[in-house]
Length: 239
Ligand SMILES: [Zn+2]
Image 1 (cartoon, rainbow, N blue to C red):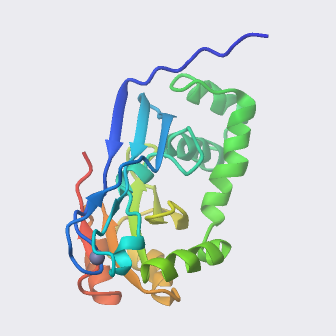
Image 2 (cartoon, rainbow, N blue to C red):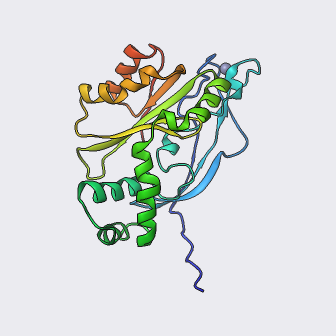
C-alpha cells in the first residue's frame, strides 16, 4: 500500500479572540494555556496549520468565566472537523449547483488547487456543503441551548465568501464558541434588503445574543444595533 504524502503547511497561524474583553462584564480576557483545536487545512491558495487559542473572563463569579471565546476568523477558515477550507467546499458547491458541473469536472478544477480525490469531492458536497445550506438553529437546538445557558446567551459571527470573486456570495451565521452554522445562504446582492431578509430569523431566536462579530459590514452592524441589541455589534477587520 502506498503511504499518502504528507502535506506541509506553508503558514502557521494561531488565532485568538478578535474582541479582547468579556461580553458580560467588560474585563480583559485571559488566554487559556491550551489550544481549542489545531489542524492542517487545505485552502484553494495554500496549506495552513491553524490553531485556535480560547480566551475566558478572569472573574470567577462572572458567567463569562465559563465561556471559552474563540476567534471568529479562525472558525471562518474551515468547518469543525474538516481539513478542507470553506473556500474549497463552497467552490465545489458553486460548481455543482450553479454551474451544473459533474463530479469529474469539479475534480479537475479543484484538484489543481488542493490534494483531493473525486470521491472525496462527492463526500464534501453531500456531507458538508448540502447540510451547511440546510442548516438552521433547530438542527442544533440542544447544543445551542446548553451553550446559551452556560454563558448567558449566544455570541455569533457573520462572514461571506465569493467563490467567483463577485456576486453571488454565500454568507454564514455561526455560533462563536462551537463554530456551529446557524444559517447560511447565497445572497445575489449585498444590499440592505437582502441582508435584512437573511438576518430576520435571528430576531426569533429563543436565546439572547450577547455580541455579534462581522468583518466590517456596516449594513450587518447597523441591523444588529437596531434589531437585537445596541451594544451587541463588534466589527473586526480580516487580515
Ligand atoms: Zn466577565
